[in-house]
Length: 297
Length: 243
Image 1 (spheres, each protein chain N blue to C red):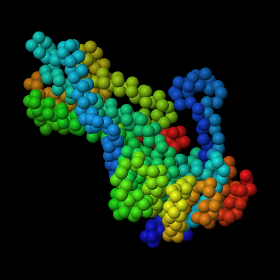
Image 2: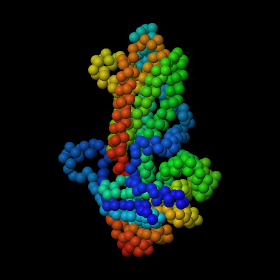
Image 3: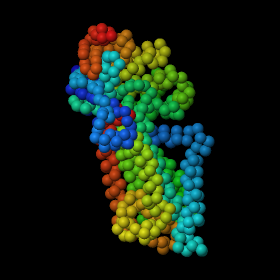
Image 4: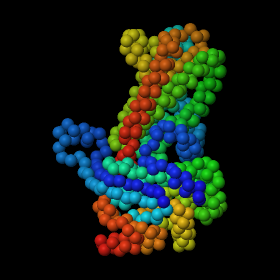
């Protein structure tokens, strides 16, 4: 006991409740780990299929899109449709796994502060933990989908270069940072206005279609023209999805399909910068708003 | 003795907003801010308080006097509008036991989760785990999901985690009515042990009997102001005279 009181004799007086933001989350890795484990454990509690749902849902989604878009709307390349995309199934699925990760991460992160209101009102802990844990949980759910994607790619004759694998990691990091940043932003705004959840739902619906997940980027370029296409291309999700196409889809084809110009030298760095900027903005807004979480929840 | 908690000119106003929708806020803004969308009230008003290390202090007052709000400022859950709150060493709250417990997790998992929430490291929880279980008298049910616990078992486990966090400053809010008579006695003994070991204790409770057994000093709040600060018996008498 003497050591404890010796410590407190020398410890400085500090203002309680003033944290270090995301840096505190890093310091509280153990708690983050436990929160993530808790979420993973309770997610499918009481359901018969359990974790299998993480496969079933994207599987069904993929089938529906593949049949409707690839077959009915003719995006798949075939003998009768030579202008389509080769290996459209792989093309589609590599985009879907990434947008699924983003959708789950952002919608849970945006609800995480209100959802953990009971705790936030009573005990001080770095509140950034909750959005970050939501994104982390989504990343764990992303893994089985990634495995399915890789297996599908291997069957389609995947032979990626090291650069392409690095591009995949970069694409994932870009989308993860964007989801965390927007999660902090909308999660904290949600405490004050519950409209925030609905804005996020709408945003996610739009995000699915403003990136070349179902269709090819060349269609956008030919309709929009070069300058508007650049605007389309600034979207970090677009860059992330294209990086995934470059890593997973392109090496399963004869690599003659055109990729967006300057994807690696220009757009991937742009994506990192934009996502980082959103993350900084999210953190800034979060810290402005978190002081009154306890009384507003 | 050094200062453990220092509160200076603390002011806190609450905004009682009745709307939670963006639409209503916008309508209010475009209609020229007619009427009051929110009502304010002073929860704490120029509160000054200094607590020395090792003191046992009761915050007393009727409902709505601001004592829980003051405790939340000391724990850092709330931040002051103006003035300052400063604390020395690690502060842990026994503020409503079981916040942070999850029904679908086992007792063991909840001990780890709750311990981490209260600021313990993994090594500390590992080390204290057996002692936590023993104190809670949960025994073999530690690996059962908490949802199957009786309310008494639940509270005992939560309290047990909280008293093992070993902070320098202990905040206790209305939770001493834990479990049955023997367990309550055990809790009280544990709290007295903590204060004997030089821990600072700040207690909020309506149970005046109990408070005067634990604390030496009483601070009475009324409508956000400190109206009395002195020996616990005098403070209890002061509060009783308010009613």
